[in-house]
Length: 165
Image (tube, rainbow, N blue to C red; front, top):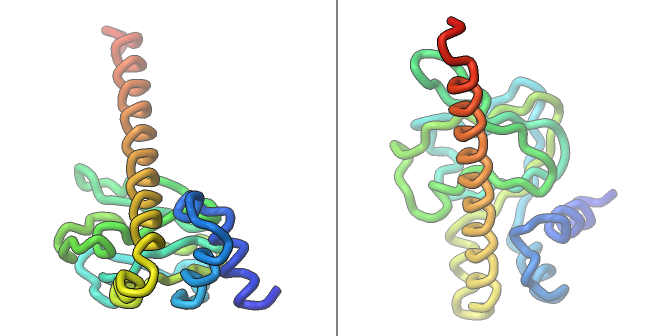
């Protein structure tokens, strides 16, 4: 599979582009680059600024997002192809707001969408920017819903255990 085919296939399978037409997805693909990561390699880390303005879209491989909570490392999510990372920096947040570490668990390929290149579409294709940002919001909403469900499940479990501890 060529790099161009990989980019298009990943974009077509991502919720990020579900409102875009084929020609708009192809225009978006033209500003995306691909980076390969080896197993164990860090993709994003708190305080790191190399990809601070870049949206990452997993194309292939196994990637894990973790955070340190209460002194312990906790898995937030195992990304699947089409999933996003680096959202805070991409939408303009500072590197200090990033608390998750994203690491390749196996050899992985990641699409990189640079914010400046993306914003360049505002002049030529504003609809792409609008619909992609709607896709980012939908993705974030899905993350929040998943985390809320997990919190409720944990609370129910603790409540059901009652005084057994």
